[in-house]
Length: 255
Ligand code: BEZ
Ligand code: FE
Image 1 (tube, rainbow, N blue to C red):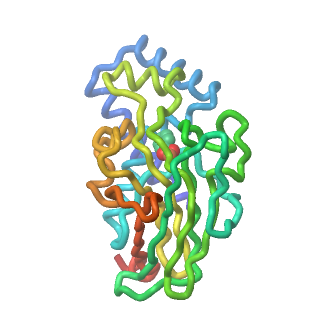
Image 2 (image 1 turned 90 degrees about the horizontal axis):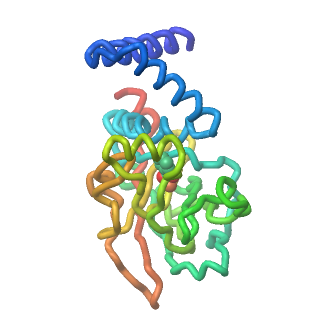
Image 3 (image 1 turned 90 degrees about the vertical axis):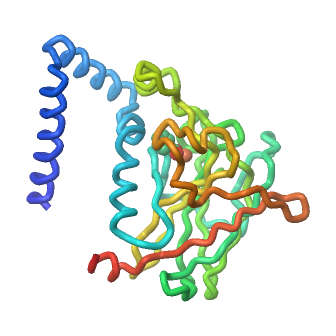
C-alpha cells in the first residue's frame, strides 16, 4: 500500500511540477491558486472540483483494463447506504416527474446470466438535485438497490432525471466559466453494479438527443455513445433497456 501511495503521489507531484515549469507560473499566481483551493475546501467543494476534472481519467483507466459495459463517472453524490427497493425507486409526487422504467439483463462476457447481483442506482430529482445532498430531500428518495433475478433480469420504475448544473455559483463553477466552459451535465441515471467474482462497474445511462450529451462539463462527449438510450415507450411510459455486461474479476486480474 505505502509503495503504491509513494509511486502515485510522486507521479502526481512530478506532473504538477512539470506543468508549473512549462507555464512559468509566478509566485503570485501560485499563491492565488493555493488560496483558491483553500476556499474551495472550506466551502466543501473539493470533492466536486476533483471529480469535474479527474474522475474521467479514472474511468478511462477502468475502460482500458476491462471489457464489458463501459465505466463512467461516479461523481461526488453517491451514498452507499441506499435502501433495497421492490421494483420502484421512491420519488416525490409534488414534482410530477415523467415515469421511466429501467430494465435489462446482466450477463458475463460469455453471455451467461449473472443472477443475485446488486444494482445500486442513484439519480437527480426532476429539478436537478440529489437526495441526502441538496435541499433536505430525504436520503431514501431517488436512490435504491435492486437484485438481479436468476436469469440476470432486473427492472425498476423511477422518474426521468433532468440535465443539471453542478453548483454554478461556487469555486468550481467560477473556475469552469473562467476557462470558457459551463457547468451543465446531461440527464443521466447512475448505477453501481456488483457481484462477488466480477469486476464492479460504475456507469451511467443517458437519454439520446438530450441536452449536453455531447457537451458534458465533466467529460465532453458522454461515453462515446455507449449507454445513450433512444426514446422508446410502452403504455405511455418511457422504457430504457439497460443491458449490462460484467467482466470476471479473474479476467481483470490477468489483464
Ligand atoms: C454527477 O454525475 O453526479 C457528477 C459527476 C461529476 C461531477 C459532479 C457531479
Ligand atoms: Fe449525477
